[in-house]
Length: 179
Image 1 (cartoon, rainbow, N blue to C red):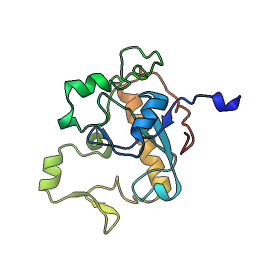
Image 2: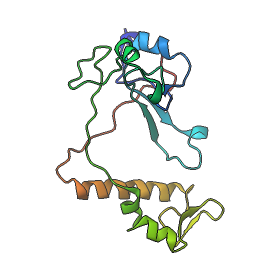
Image 3: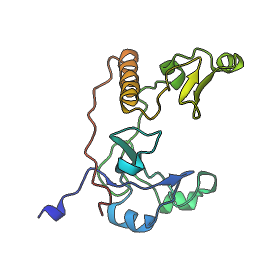
Image 4: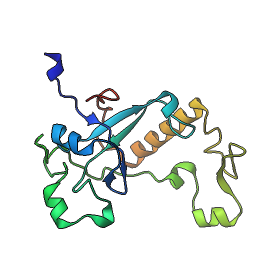
C-alpha cells in the first residue's frame, strides 16, 4: 500500500560539528540507514535570513554520533555513514557527493577584495539599517522579491561559470515530520 512508499529522503536531522544533535538519531539510523534527510523551511521557520521555498538537507557521514574532533576509527567502523562512491541504496551506501562548482559570496555581491572593502570602512550589511554601506546587494534582507532576485543572480552566475554543468531539478523532499 501507500504506506510502503519510500521517499527520496528520510526526515531532516540537525548536525552540529559533524554530530547528530536532533532527538532519536540512533532510531532513525536503524530505520532508514544513513540516508540523506531533508525538510522544507517555511512559515515561522523561515526567519529573517532564510528564503521562501528553502530546503534544509542533512547528509550523515561516518560516525555521526560524535563531533568531528572526537571521531575514532572504532566509531567510523561501527557507524559508517551513507557516503560512498556509487550509491546502491544500502544502509551504508546511500549518497555520493562531488564538487560541481562554486560561487563565492564576494563575486556574487561584487566585492573584489574583501580586506580592501572593509579597510575602506564599508559594510556588506547592517541589521540596524537593513542596508549595506557601499554595497546594496544585501539591502532588504527580509524582502521576498529581493531574496528571490539574489537567488536568481546566484543561479545565473553559476550557469555562466559552468555552462556545461547539467541542469538539476529540486528533488522531492519528504514531508516535515515524515517517519
